[in-house]
Length: 411
Ligand SMILES: [Zn+2]
Image (cartoon, rainbow, N blue to C red; front, side):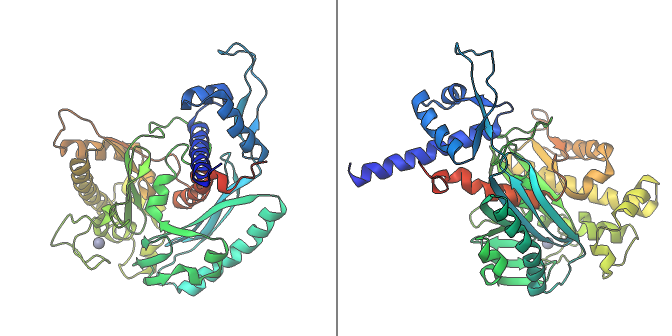
């Protein structure tokens, strides 16, 4: 057979297998070979060939046959097999360092998080700590027979080419080649912005079995994700895919200017959204910390902020009111710009409760140009526990979904 034809068939098999994996991940119920073939538009013979490879390589397993079948005979549903294929998500963030190992079946195999305020920290020390956390994990996974499909690192800054951090202002880091760190190269990792990865964690079935939960966003829906930490990050998901922009920096909603004469932002500009609605800005404006106080950067003051706001403290109420106005302005401008109805509000906001969410939704709605014809929907995300780290692990598994034949032995 000519070489060109063989390559074409390999590409086709890779593509078809990738679609099979995504279809299984996005489905709420396990699907049989016949149901998969029908849903994707492949012959049953091709589907049997593909699923046999996935079964032999421990990606899929067969569940007990169901007695009822629309195809005339008992059907054997397929599901992801736990215990074989994992993605590794790592994070160095302003509030700590950690990792999570996610099985393709959706289970968390192991995870750890060292909580601490990480402002102006030495990068060598941070990566040495991450290295120390990961070495025993890598050993343990190998002993238990796991295969790592891929590894990602979430960083709170601008990342380019997957391996170069241009700037992370809250760390005081600038222009770092991440390959110089052993943990990064040993795990063949790539890096990404934390808000982008946190948004990916909210897309059902992106590269692991979707969770069976009531969540209005489907695998192919569109939404804007707002991540609020010390600063504010964001990401834009269109029909289930991240929109990265021409240079990979899209979604920086925290640096939308809401007041040209406002306070100086850490990015060097004035009046950015995060100077009013970020965690540091909120705790300082509420009178809970001084601006140069390291406490202002930590998560420790959040319970105090929530309590002060609930208790009707004037300074806290004013700080939150000002933040809501600024957020509403930035979000409405975003919606007017890209025509998007779903906004997922991650980070500290869920601690204020559903009343605040409804209030913010009303404010955004009133500023939408098409307000008579469309409705925006604001919601808190389903994944709130270190979502960027979780998204990083999902992106690690995504390598298996994007190029499955690379990981499979065919016979
Ligand atoms: Zn800024």
